[in-house]
Image 1: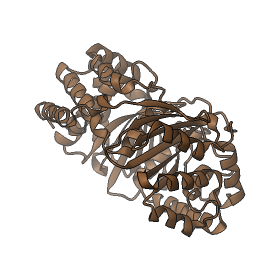
Image 2: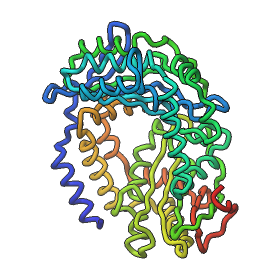
Image 3: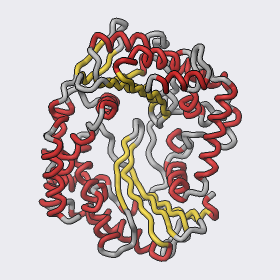
Image 4: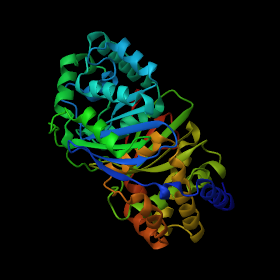
Amino acid sequence: MNAIAARALGACLLFLASLPAHAIEIKRVVSPGGIEAWLVEDHKVPVIAIEWAFEGAGAADPKGKDGLANLAARTLDEGAGPYDSQAFAAKLQDSAIALGFDAGRDAFTGSVRTLKQNRDEAVELTRLALTEPRFDPEAVERMRAAVLSSLRRDQADPNYVSRRLFYSTAYPGHPYGDEIRGTLEALPTITPDDLRSFVKTQFGRDRLLVTASGDITPEDLGKALDRIFGALPAKAAVPAIPDAKPQGLGETLVATRPTAQTVMLMGQPGIQRSDPDWYAATVMNYVLGGGGFGSRLMEEVREKRGLSYGVYSYLISLDHSALVMAGGSTVNAKAGQALDIMRQEWKRMAEQGVTDQELADAKTYLTGSFPLQFSSTQAIARILLQVRRDRLGIDYLDKRDALINAVTQADVQRVAQRLLDPANLLTVLVGKPEGVTATRTLDGGS
């Protein structure tokens, strides 16, 4: 995408979106039991979505029980209270209720979506899943088998191998370096009692953040909050996670695989979401590799030289660390060339920053595309939850455009010089790359 096309797309996005995010009213709701939630009340469609997170829960599995939080997430809705797995699934299906859980690197999250007419049923089933999960042996074994199968299957995926090698190298001995789903050795040791203990100790109201959207009043949401979460422990027993600085900087690791293409992944210390320079970094990343076909990496690596179908960059802000990353793939014979170009663009951004036009195009897209993310009741609740988790404030949606539009060329160059150093990149390649000098080679990707 050239500059003219990028400007046209940005203008189109602005027109289509009509800035709905700015028209959203977020209400702070506190239940009779003292549980706080943010609500976007909208009665146009009879749908309700509730999202929540237990911060820090599941971020570190007990030693020898790797994958415990993820297995809990997979089995919480496999039977609860008086309903076994089949009966619980039937109750959800009969009432068109979508209930799900996920174990992340910094939080254990959940969501429920329901038609207004089935709200009470959805609230009750969610309560049961959180407070009375059954963890019947049959269900646990079935979910365990599914996780083990996915882990075995991923061993043959070069993209998976590259991610695992990168994170295990960058964060050795830290939960961020572990596989969230666990290991083939540890998963079989997890028992239903382990899962019950996890739920009892990790789901505390002191760690709880909740958001909601849709056809529900603040009064009714308050009652639902107490019904779902009121019986949980007041405090969770969550182990403290230390801050971590990425390791392996400057290394180039090659995991050999008998593949026709090489997967490339590289990164170095990034920027936290709470940093005032986050918006300048966001603009920088958009121009560098986050802007799709309009980005420099795509232009130099794919458009000009045809070395890759796709190459990209992105920012990762975790609770205890941050990364600026780039990745892509290319044929083995061109791996060295593609990698050199990516590093050159890393350096050029640090030395020269962005042009006036690149800055304007990035701002147009970043402000114009954001409202399009508010595409459904669930999407709105999910965005609100991320805003809460990032501690951005209840007025963030009103301020976001101004914060991005305030970014200057000098801001971008300052942040680029601070973050981007091609000599400091941890680089991982999986395949049979040619023209690459490796500091360490792992035969078979082990």
